[in-house]
Amino acid sequence: MLKSLVNIQSAFSHTRLFLILLVSSNLIILGCVAFFAFNFKVKQEQKIYALQGEQSLMFALNQNTSDNREAEANATIRDFHELFFNILPDAKEIEYRMQRALAMSDNSVYSVYKNLKDNRYYEQITDAGIFCQFKCDSINIDFTRYPYHCSMWGKTSIVRTSSTTFRNVETTCQLRNCARTNASPHGFLIENWEVVDNSDLNGINSLY
Image (cartoon, rainbow, N blue to C red; front, side, top):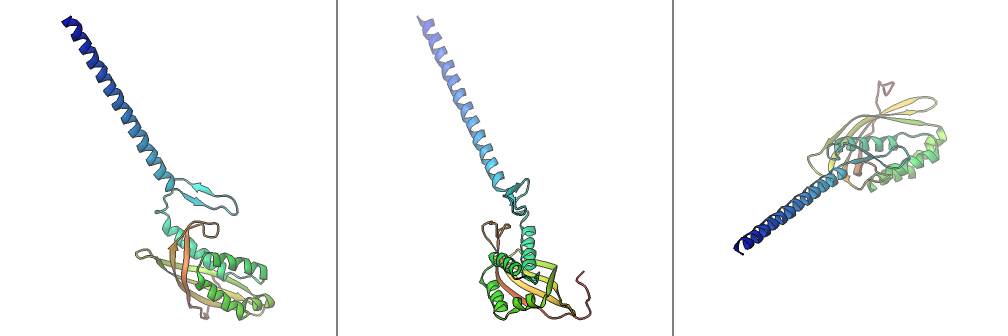
């Protein structure tokens, strides 16, 4: 009888040990699954999205948004100024480009655009068949303070049938993070934009 009780107790101990090991192993497996799932989620959120023309969004693998932010900020400034200062003598094209530039910026840009439009600047360009070509020389962005302070230096050529005028272009603005949209694929909004210098240049016969 005593031997039977010992055998039962031993079997119970083995069963309890087996259950403890089973539960422990299941908890370890669940912990590992949760860890790898969280890790995967974090990596997915770090992927950036790039627009290719008018096509849908495609994610760019192995790119961390924080690592690429400086390049995106520079691209935003360059793209905006090319939209605003590259002007063809075509009213529809001018309107299209200006609306794209305005979608990337706040009212400071709209104020400059409205002033030019009210003074018939764009109308004179189309009537006279003038081409305005812009070239960005350099961009400086201060990432130590937010919103990020930006300065841009470039040149424009104003080509008429009789002559070509070259002008210096210096602007300042601030960049604020915003949601990525078709209008702002890099996720920046241009604020407090100001043209600091737009004076004529002497002795220059080409932008390049």
